[in-house]
Image (cartoon, rainbow, N blue to C red; front, side):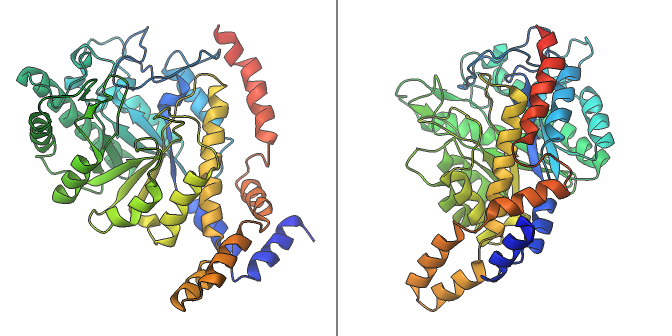
Length: 416
């Protein structure tokens, strides 16, 4: 008997249909993030690098993408090693300007047509993000809540332009784009006025979202943050601010795994938030003592997020995107490790004997509930995961790493 058939039998003993789990997993898209490939540098000018925004990438592993062609080639390579359905998340600072001098408030869909065409040939949906960092008008740490009305207007126009771009992506590709709004605004030290910046931010967001967009083409999400480098004491867009804004305006709320206090459990927020907003966006990341955007691994936090999504019946209302950037290791390996870890967490959740566990809970038999949760941890999950990879025509087990090493020698090493 094959290892998969043995695993299938073991799961069946607890009422779990592994075939149904594999089918469902293949249908759940994971949105890869373009910025892992070049350390959030972007493509707006030849020497573009990440600056400001309360975010930081560390390391200088050789072979990072230096232009859009190289970046897309690297994404292709990573995608070929990741099973299941995929999308691509693009930041506005990755515009394909072709030498044209145009600022972010004047970006148009044509500046992203090459991304759309590229995605279309690969049957990928696109997601989008306005870029409120790495720009002279964001250098002081304020954008949409800036006290200068002119600066605020520039960033409002950038947000409006971004929604138009995203809607065109959704229209051309036939799958709605999720456009996520995150801004870095905040103070390094204790502010005297916490209210005024938040009033300005609310007004700016209202201006950006004033024109309705067909939800079949684009939906908007807003993302909070606990703190950033340079905004340690006060972030304008706190969790409470954006949760209130999302509920009031029925926007998606983005929950980023690195944007909360280390003692908070993001998984516990999912069912609460989805009582009051239509959908959520999960940014799957891994903070180590701070919002450090480490590569996602199959840890307890990632598993808990996916368990809550599956247990709550929230798959259809949850958009899952990766958000990390590690320049200290092979960047393609980072994509693959993070995406495969996320998918493993989803599969583990789908393979949970949830019917039996719920039945015990309803009956008040909490000993059986705990026992089944523990038994599920030692079921032969790896055999089911390997079967999924084989059926998706990607390397099984650690075999993908050899392909990355070959690509590093034949492609990445030549970029020095």
